[in-house]
Amino acid sequence: MIKKAVVAGGCFWGMQELIRQQPGVVETRVGYTGGSVVNPNYENHTGHAEAVEISYDTEKTSYKNILDFFFRIHNPTTLNQQGNDIGTSYRSAIFYANESEKKEAEDFISLVNKSRRWEDPVVTTLEPLDIFYPAEKYHQDYLQKNPDGYTCHAVYFESYLQ
Image (cartoon, rainbow, N blue to C red; front, top):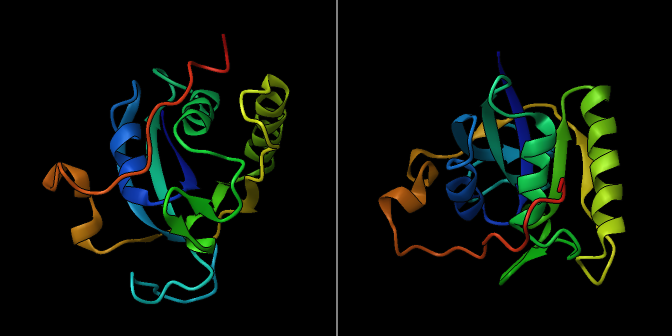
């Protein structure tokens, strides 16, 4: 079965590039969610986070594995910032589709905090998923089209699930 997860952790280009390579991920799209602007775009997405919508095959991976990788590729302890990107557009957030996903995300945040891998506590917000607005075409697969483009994401840690 194909399910979707939506996460935000800074500039969506770098997140998409790393997430797309994960086992079980069948498609990724970058876009905007979590704000009040209708039909946001790059120039006007006030309140929205730059996010990645992840379609994944539940026979090959799980929501927990998606969360695990998400927390390994960005700093979830910096409020509204990743690298040089600053502002609420770059917040760390999990956009949950139902109470089960919310609970799993809460449990995972607790696991990350208990791991003490980060000096400061996790500030990742849990927000109900409303509408995911796909970003403009030139943002989709950006680092595939521009391999020397900007990213502030990397794999920082091994799995939290070991």
